[in-house]
Amino acid sequence: MITRSKLVEQLREYQIRSQHKWAALTSFSPKPHITTRQDVVVALSYALIFCFLIISSYVTLYFKHFRLSAVFICLGILLPTCLKISRHRKLSRKKERRMLLPLSM
Image (cartoon, rainbow, N blue to C red; front, side, top):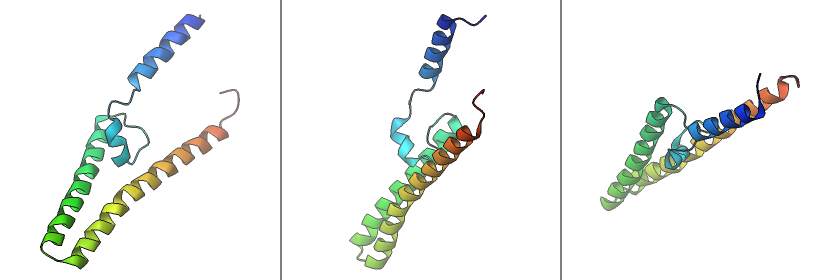
């Protein structure tokens, strides 16, 4: 029989497991929450791409290639924006699926 104390204990364990250990990387993750190692690798790769774009825009500005620098800056702005939009879409799809479940579940 499931008691209230067992449910509270399970909830605490779940909350401990789902803590945000990678909070700094969530801005570069296409998923709303980083749960697996694969999510961490994807977020790290997007963060490295972003750093590469920013550094290359500085280098191209140093060598006075203004158009190429503008392209790198636009891509650097576009990358986090697209990731934020994809996170928002996944969250909205998740909310819609929850609303479709019957109340007994």
